[in-house]
Length: 434
Image 1: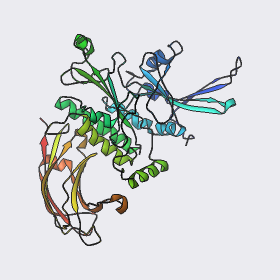
Image 2 (image 1 turned 30 degrees about the vertical axis):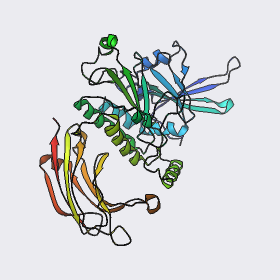
Image 3 (image 1 turned 90 degrees about the horizontal axis):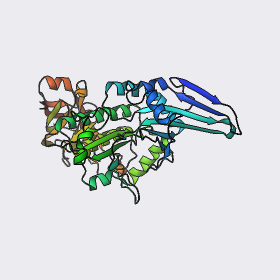
Image 4 (image 1 turned 180 degrees about the vertical axis):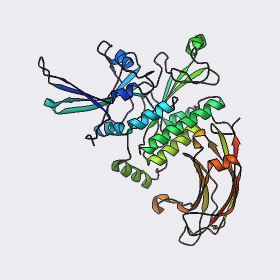
């Protein structure tokens, strides 16, 4: 895995001197990191100013991390240095080109900005250590009053005594919500979904949304907000609707793939009955769960929850002649509708292969969904997924978003694909965001 060729490598060797061993220092793809965001936050000059020879020595940083890696922070609090494994280093090299393209295309991306990937070898001692340099999610000029590490999981996600960083259960217990105007909320949720989609493409999971909150005191409100004509601050952070708080958000710790060990951990959680709420789930389940958590639990949600473009109105009527999902020849069907990484579902109709739901669901639509399809899948609900292997597929149909944007789509008795028989009736229309 470590033999994967990086985009570029620079190597510096310091020979033995004054009783100190020879040290080999390698840096990977430094040009790509330096131009990541056109050099505004992670340029070579910025890094050297904070971490160079003339900079004040870094400080060790205490964290809640279970990885056992070491963290250091520059004296000016602008950059962090974290040791990583050989596998994580190879993974970052693999995704680097797509990561750079994503950041350049979406300047408001929440994904943490890396400033360097390095390796130090001490051959005589048999030591080799990889580490990354990354820009702090927070603005060092302002005190962060509250910090939360949010994954979208509610299983054992509460901070321990003595820890300062809250987790998902602490966030909910404190009834925290980001108070943002409607347009900014839609943009933030859309951006987070795009970020999660990128991470899903590379099969990673267990990443966190780091949230820091600065409470603005009245005397300090003017200098704090001086560069905030809107709600997205040019130097990072989002100003709350009442302009009494600044929120700093960043997706961190995403260099973890769904390895055999992680798959085994997930299977154990399923057997224990925590398969859906535990932190360790498949990359697709992880991304969709966090997207829902951010939209429904992290950001204050209005009654007419919309995406950056608007929302779809799905009127789910009925299904007929569904296949049998149970061994006794019946099904307990429900419909799940999905667009991008967000989904909603109807109620379950018990013991009926010709169910009638007659319910209305809404899905947020973002500009990035223009070329996507709405997936409408029918499932047979299983009461004991740990024993029965999850819900059974009863068929699906897909409708292009572009078709719905043009005019409402009415489907009556439409044949379900992926199964031998069964039909679904529904109507889908688009409501534009105000």
